[in-house]
Image (tube, rainbow, N blue to C red; front, side, top):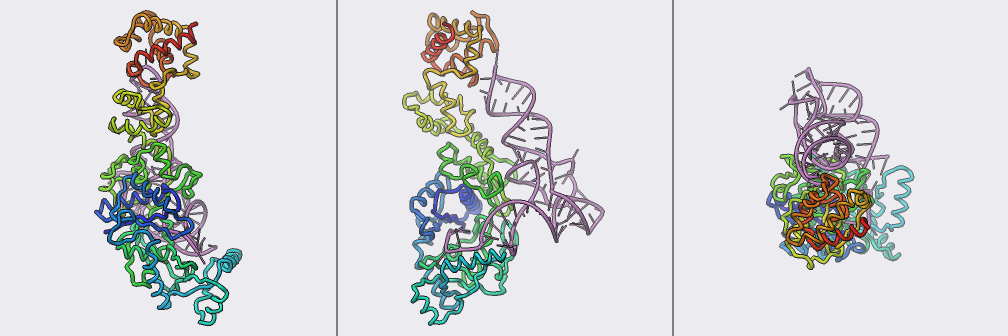
Length: 480
RNA sequence: GUCCCCGUCGUCUAGGGGUCUAGGACACCGGGUUUUCAUCCCGGCAACAGGGGUUCGAAUCCCCUCGGGGAUGCCA
């Protein structure tokens, strides 16, 4: 069994395509199938090497590994369609020779006019077959005009194509209503997707094509090509599409669609893969947080959803948070530190074990890695400017008593060794303050906020010097 | 327009003739824990698109309607 993912390098890896890649990968793992990566770069205007590189990079980041591809090579290469033109040429010559295809001299403008006419008349456009049977003289005349022909596939009449789709079930098409003879080679000699996809699948011995549902209406064209060429037809599984909140095909206006951007925002590959797989698939156990191995062992080609799924950014965030919390602390630190650096904190300035404790204290607040700076700031900045709530709290008369006592203690009585254990206790004892009247001012003066990790964790992590500086700052600001 | 696909809580889904007064998850709303926040725990809200069949019995099977999506490219 052999599966493939065949992206077109015309931009970044789209989240919907990533889902196709992930599902193919899980299925390949499940059935112990070969996973082939093929680059469909026949759109010469839009395809770029830079895009191909970024797609490969994103796939690797997701944890997807392929057995054959443009970078790894393999027995069925080359794996870029742009490097296989001579192969397609042979098939085109064969079709031409057998009259299963013919040269078409209609210009794009003429075609456009016919299309417009059909749409204005409320009819479906079907190529009328104007060039179906040109004789030598007619062809020569067109050539003399400087027209460069495309090659059209002669769609046989009255043929039925039945696709036994693993997800959709039996889908039946009549050759009479697939739009007429379609172009298989452009006038510049470059073949088009609908034509060569089936050749490559056959030559690369792909047994199962798992791809987006948007390809379903193209399938009969591909099957007809295969029949004309005597090539084997793979089995199909057409995945339902991913939609945005308004139920139209997911696009940028719905939110982030680039895998690279998710990575940069601090989503974990494991979480993204997990979420993508859950979009249109549910484990029998009902569990939703699953490793790649667990998903691979439970997934089946036949139990993927038939209906489209709306991409829920909120749920992805939730899932990412779950993964962040489950991370081994050292790995969490490795992942978070670059985000601290991005916010201007030089991680090398801090002691690693201390930094890990800080991260552990605030990771529960983080849904994405880039949330870290906001929550860790209270440990990393020297002075925390109190926010509005904290200011209001520190202006309370009781709070001033607490702040004043804190200052007295930390300047006169407490030091590095005992402040953490004694500061709050002594304030309580000496001022008689308790409950929120005690903890809130302490929290506000030490962290600048009324919210945050428990003080028992926060105070020792802050360290004596920083606590002292903040107490003095609060005292200057609110008690003088 | 034509062809194709799809239709269970707001969202992702379980369910495939009786065990469904329809289960889980996210979100939301309460409550508990945390003297705070987040986490965590408990509870609540909320759906079989509509209409006809078939059947003793339909969310499940069939048909129609409606709704949504996709395709209809010298894009993939």
